[in-house]
Image (cartoon, rainbow, N blue to C red; front, side):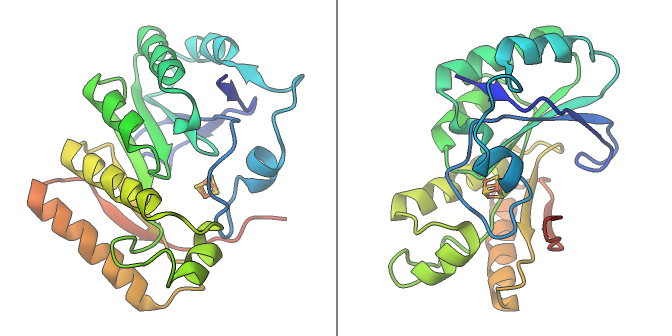
Length: 222
Ligand code: SF4
């Protein structure tokens, strides 16, 4: 079941040039990243029945915000961890009640769901993190690096899924999308050079305007 965190956040910075409403799904995450800002509230803490919002309650509150915001951003945890049917049905209803842009934030591990939502035009943009040069790392040989940055040792399929999602976002070519990397202090400069080079090659391949940014690392507040 899709459930949401009750605190909605008004933001000017997540989507430059837009006043957006940031809504967090409260369905956990399949990674445990270094310095995750959502870990305490949204991942370590499981949904609390008397606090969580259902999809219906979230839609009611969002409907009351129509006209006040240019965009709604759905984040998590991992927003796409929800079932395909629930995500589609939820986003179809968002389209009906909210006239602004719909953006999702994802770690990229669900390319099938992402592709479907883009094909159905249920989302206008995607903010996706490419945290490591997944195209160059080996899940066995580089297990320590994976564990340090994404908190798990992934399968080769898991890494390929993230690469497929990055490809989808760049090919979709929305000026509302973003590919981002955090400058994790544990990684040497070479990692960031490799990620940037991979993304820029894809952008050239698809003649894409999707911006790529290497963002500073901000430790979570205690
Ligand atoms: S993918 Fe995002 S929400 Fe999930 S653990 Fe990593 S930083 Fe946190």
